[in-house]
Figure 1 (cartoon, rainbow, N blue to C red):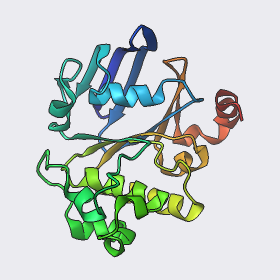
Figure 2: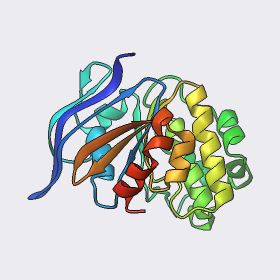
Figure 3: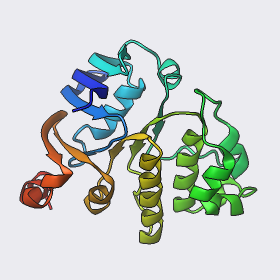
Figure 4: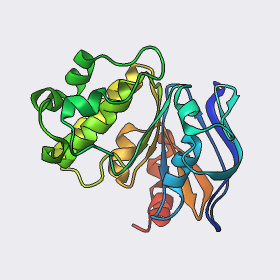
Length: 234
C-alpha cells in the first residue's frame, strides 16, 4: 500500500467555544479520489477547511508530503500545492470570467494552461467576457474549479461541487474529476450526492459528529449499501 500523501491524526477544530472536530484520522494517497460522506453538520466541510488552514483554532496533526501543516497559515499551505474550492464558489460578481480565472497567482509550477482548461470546460471559453453575475450555477462551479487548476495545485479539496446543479452539468463535473485523476491529481471531496460520489471515488470516509466512523472501499460498495443508507439517513 503506497504511503499517504495527506494524513490527519487526532485533528480537532473549534469555532469559538464550539468543538466541531473530535480527533479526525484519515489518509489520502497520491492519485486517489477520496470522498467524505455523512449527514449535514457532521464536520465534513470543517475537515477540509482545517486541512487548508482556514480554521484558526485547530490541533492535532495534518501532514502533507511529510510537512506538518497544523501551524502553517493558509497561504503557506497553498504554496505547497493544495487548493480549496468552497461550496459557495466565491465568484467575484463584478469581474468577468477571464478576470476571475486569472485573479489567483500561480502557487506552484505546472499550473493548467487556458487551452487545457477550456477543453475541460468549453462553456467558459464561450462566456469569457461575461460578468460573474451572469453565469449559471453550473458555469460558476466550472469557473471555481478552473481557477484553482491554474494555480499549480495538485491536491484539490472540493466542497459539494454538484450542489444544486442540473444532471447534465453534474455529469460534466464527474468527467472533469475523472480526467484530473487520470492526470495524477489527488482529490479529497465532500459530496452529499452519493450516486455521484460512487461514480468518481476510490474510497469513502463516513463522518458523524465530528469523527470518522467508517471507511469503505469502492470494491465493497455493493455489500455496504445498507450501512451507507443508515449513515446517510436515506
